[in-house]
Length: 416
Image (cartoon, rainbow, N blue to C red; front, side, top):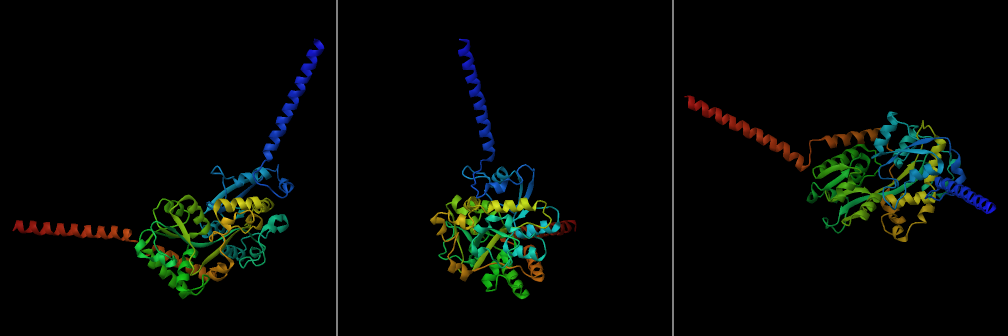
């Protein structure tokens, strides 16, 4: 009996030790589990135990963040894979990004500006040259996005997304058969039109309507574009960027120019939303990942850029935000419905004939545009609601003065 008892005790102890070891092994594996399949997992182990962090500055609503059940948090996936923590903040316009970097008040390791702003930042020596040997997944970027006018030597940027600008509209309130830019000036939709709250996109619409180049530096043409925007001001409800999601979704406005990717997101969420790309011409934009001068962790930043170029990562971004991907491996994962929807991936002929990529303008043209934009927004020309209130106040003051004068005259007559 003693021998049998000892044998059972030994067996139980062995099973317990094995079980504990098995549980411990599973725990170690859990720490490395990621929803993103990567091509070379060894590449991402370099800084695993170094306690590094990077600061990433990106557009709002521009990366899957795990906020819904069917999406992952891509930054958390990167941290789980590499051990590098991501401090992630957002901006609304290229000009906001530029001002933040130029002011030197904050240091970032990765930023995602648009084409023309990248060109400007290269010119002003604000970006670090990239070491592409540390970004092996750059091979996934489509050939047509590898050589660009804004980064002609392909030294400073890696494309993140691309798309076109068009008009988001409430199809229950708009009955026009063909929608073009002039609808944003139609007084029938007064106080129901939203407009870009940044000068480059807003001026581009006016320039297209006037037949000017989207990259014009002619001061007279810029002034005429500003005049066109001033004409529109009386029917504009508000100048917005990301606020468009709430306003169009809630039916507070019926028309707004915006980016195709955001239009797709709105169309998925709201049945009354539709989108049109004006045939008269529009902007084709490319947003790309860059490393600012003075970053603290360049190698870790390049690792982050490489991670975003993984096929699964690029697909997750495109699937979540609705913008078009320049990543060939991710593109091949998309459904035929998305590839052929006419919004995400317009045909090459349309892109060739009807779209323009922004170039960086000269300092003089940039300064002139900014000044004209500021003057336009602060001009006396107001929307109807804003005019009615002060006009009513003036009428009330005049009426009050008339009453006082009438009483004074009456009192004087009573005295005599």
